[in-house]
Image (cartoon, rainbow, N blue to C red; front, side, top):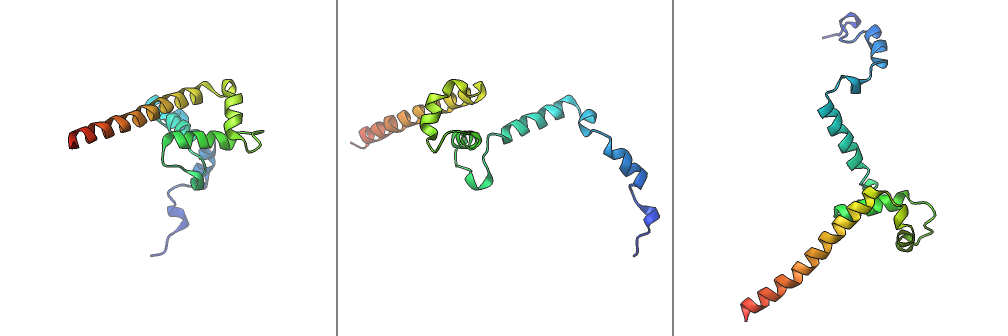
Length: 119
């Protein structure tokens, strides 16, 4: 079956009109909020080949990738410039670091409880 150019779904005139439309103005605020939050969450991830298994690692790595002037001393740079980091990154780092500390402590508590149960 051969298609006829006159049967196009979108005409050239329609195509030109679409160039000037902004789809964001047609979306509900709920949908736009979701798009905004997903695009912000995407910033927490580094390039595909540098993704780590934990969210904390990915946030830290993506932040490291955006650093300039670290001169291969990311840890020292981070300690020296902690106050200059955005509050969002500081908050997420503190939250995940607290969770990591808690999980490490719980591991040893669980280990001791298991050893007591066995003996």
